[in-house]
Image (cartoon, rainbow, N blue to C red):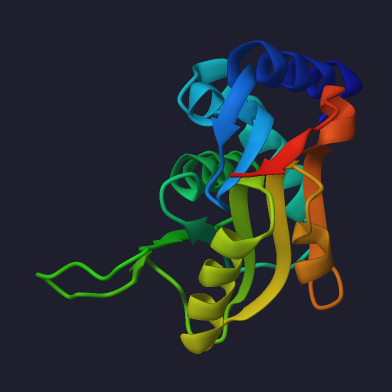
Length: 187
């Protein structure tokens, strides 16, 4: 990814996905900003740039699969595996359901996760890392080896500490890149 592409992706995140105000987060805390990643995950230019960035961040890892927890990981995974294909490499994509379906195969992992695969977990925005950790645990329970955890934006509220001692941790951006100064309060 060129510097121009990285700057363009950062500009798209800032202009499309970041809002300021009063927001309640999944953790229950109140925040003065919110990153609604769906505003970039379903935008053609943004998702192409994200796929290129994820490919670049994972191409040296000898992976067999990439994926993460629904919903944010689905478009990220799709874009990333497409970039692997464009570069002449095969890559399996998958996503982890928060809950198994009540019908069909009732599996939590959808897509193909090869036995003993080396895997990267992707997520859109990480705060404490809880969502990505669910995906990591499910993938490891299935017998794969998680080697890296990547996210589009790290809110710098504990996710690095959850993952960096055990996996490669590679956020594409942090709050510092977005020039955001967080103000968090208990709800």
